[in-house]
Image 1 (cartoon, rainbow, N blue to C red):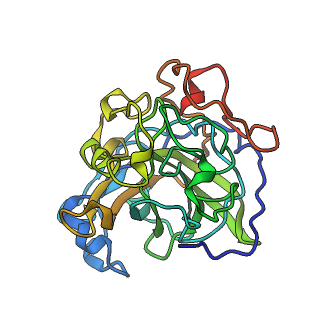
Image 2 (cartoon, rainbow, N blue to C red; image 1 turned 45 degrees about the vertical axis):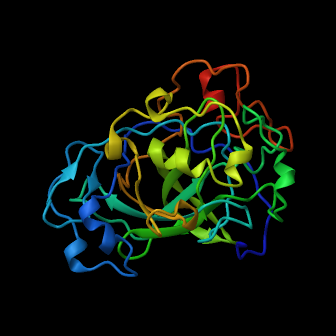
Length: 322
């Protein structure tokens, strides 16, 4: 699959360095899974109730009628590149198990009502642990060179992108199941932006309301990693309980609800859901929490192609492994 875009240039600048206001990411209730993948959101999917504090998520089931207080933002990590393209399909031909993400942005300060126009940005590594823009960074263990996968992906843009939320606060991405790199578990990074607008194929202006990470159940991830091309990356995979960022909170800690496209055949792909409860008035620097200690010596050590590190670039601190 190839992303449809004209401009593959990408710029780097720091995310807004502001503080104050915490927001959250949480899981979509299993009961609402079928409706979550409908093309439109029905009235029965609306959520009601009040949020405790400024961080909450909404269940897809109207029977719940409440919002839950969830985790604070976590670290942006060292592999962020500003200027990602606005597009649904971010694969650019990268090989891997298909993954469809359906994310819903709600206002945690206003009864978990949808936030239309919110921009959700995601980025993650490929099947062997490489990030676009940092393809010389060592993913740990033993992996082929990133260039050996035979894809035609742009080294600065693959597996990165924005989507703008519809009237129901929903965005949908087509990507691949991420691989892993030492010492992190399998994860996807994300930011929620509001107040900006699409310009020249990217998203400009506004502010960052939330910086978070999405996680995958160990049993599903480890099964996927036995498949090609993931199996070519050997080494010790970090489980959820041992990850320096995941807080053990299940859906409340960013753990995706995953369903296979075809039962008993993981190679056919997965659908993942998550509801992101944000405070649209809050601004988040991307620093977050969850550094989790010093990475081992074989943690990723690459630098951006131009030699100019973006926000959160690798240093001697624990953030070098996030």
